[in-house]
Length: 250
Image 1 (tube, helix red, strand yellow):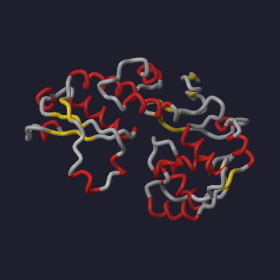
Image 2 (image 1 turned 30 degrees about the horizontal axis):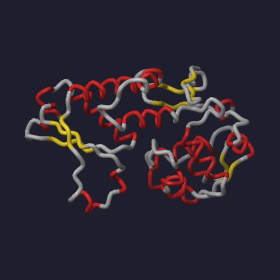
Image 3 (image 1 turned 180 degrees about the horizontal axis):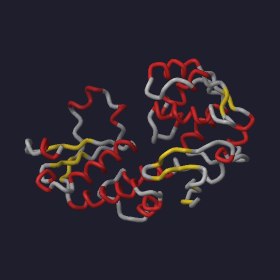
Image 4 (image 1 turned 180 degrees about the vertical axis):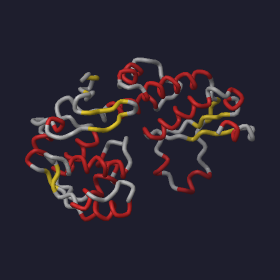
């Protein structure tokens, strides 16, 4: 990548405000910090919206402000990337108290990510809880849960990742969600076409247990296995960092 960029007088980085985009940006800046000749060519566009919603023709006239990438941006990015890769979320939480103004979207993104840690009361992250809340309000198919951004509210996971989270909510030993197509138990995660078809066939509702979780009367993690990664943190039932909205150690 660094060698490729050396072929050009200027290289512009366009990364919007979504968590996955900002994580890519801090990873890339951390990488470029070892190549000062390349850094001298970099310009960072200050994008303040989600480019996925921008009309294709909008890019022709839209030119957000551009700034040089300096040591301040590189230092902030490296701190964020190393914190996210750490074996616990503590370093990310500590970053909230630091000056992150070199990369303005970063602090809201860190909050979004931390909110996806299991809640202290329910054992589920923000996206999982929001899906349960929408199902409890009568949304029985996956389209609103995955695609209607104003309804779903959270923005950390893409549509396929939301589908994997829904698997966990509906296919475990004590499901919170009923109505997921049974074929999802056997379809491989990389078989996106068949997963999409099965998800569209699903008609969702909450179990009694799911209603208790939504009411914060039950902890999902006490009845179901937890095994997923949050950055460099491996979340399991025995190693479950939580959010309260402050960091709660296992």
